[in-house]
Length: 154
Image (cartoon, rainbow, N blue to C red):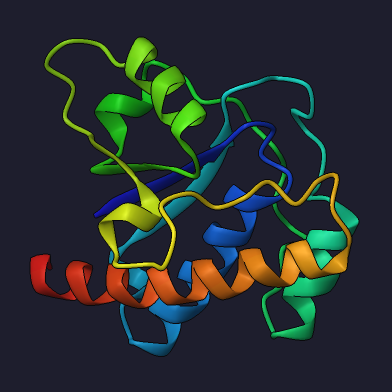
C-alpha cells in the first residue's frame, strides 16, 4: 500500500503526517508493507526540509522529520499511490483539478475520513507553537484510524 499526504508547501502539515504515520506503522509492525510520502500543491519549498517549528514539535513527541525534503505533487502520483490525503479543502480542490480520469488513487480529506473533531488540518505556518501542537494532536488521532484501515486492507 502507498499513502501520500498533501498540503500547500510540504513543510508543515504533510511532512508531520508522513512522520507520524511512519512511526505508527513501525509500532504496529506494518512499516515494511506501507510506503508513506508527502508533497505540496505548490513548488515554493521544493528540496527544503520541514519547517523548524514542525520538526521541533514532532521531535518532542519522538517523530524525526529531519530526513524529509519538500516535493511537489505530480500527475504521476495519482497512479503510484493508493491513497492521497489532502490536509484541507483548498488542497483537495487543487488535487481534484490535477487528478487524471481513471487514476488509481483514492483521494480524500484526511481528517474527515478518520472521525476527527474537525475536517481540516489548520495551517500552523503563521501561528505560534500551539498551532504546531494542535496539528500533531489532529494528525496523531487520524493516523490511528488510518493504521487500522491499512491493517484491514493488507
